[in-house]
Length: 208
Image 1 (cartoon, rainbow, N blue to C red):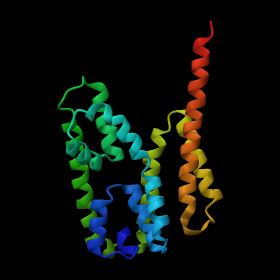
Image 2 (cartoon, rainbow, N blue to C red; image 1 turned 60 degrees about the vertical axis):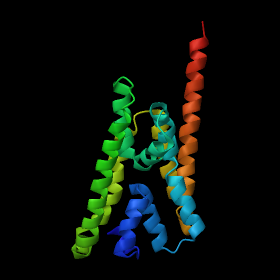
Image 3 (cartoon, rainbow, N blue to C red; image 1 turned 180 degrees about the horizontal axis):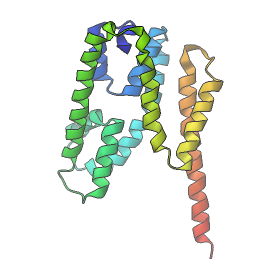
Image 4 (cartoon, rainbow, N blue to C red; image 1 turned 30 degrees about the horizontal axis):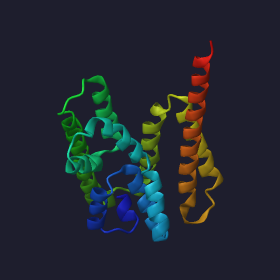
């Protein structure tokens, strides 16, 4: 539905959902596409939003490094926020085994299938839903519900507050550059606070 409102055809919307398999990146892509953002800015912004997947991959590589390259590439494609959370919890609670990757494969395929089915339903039924329903609010509400429970430590909270503040300050910038700047500010804030806390704890442990 969001893709159709941005000017994409139903077929383009479906393939976007399949190729760009990530909720946040899809929303950012459609918003920037709808406003005629230059291609370079569009790609840079979507890439910045997806930087967290590098961290997901680094964490999961500990459990998947024994797999052939084609397995790791396919599982990397399926590694969304939800699949990472479910499988990483499973991996850390269970003893390591060579078959652990099937858990990530199963959860990833289920999430992918549900996502594509939901996309088709949105394409077919979306145009019939009255604007008065204000379903667009469901998008930020969904991300609020996902993010808030994860803010359990100071670095996470500081990163969220910093990126949110930066988004408000720089929202006037053209080409939606505020998205890139706020994401970078959040990453820097979270990384810096984590480093400072780690350094403090290390210094405390060394004291006699």
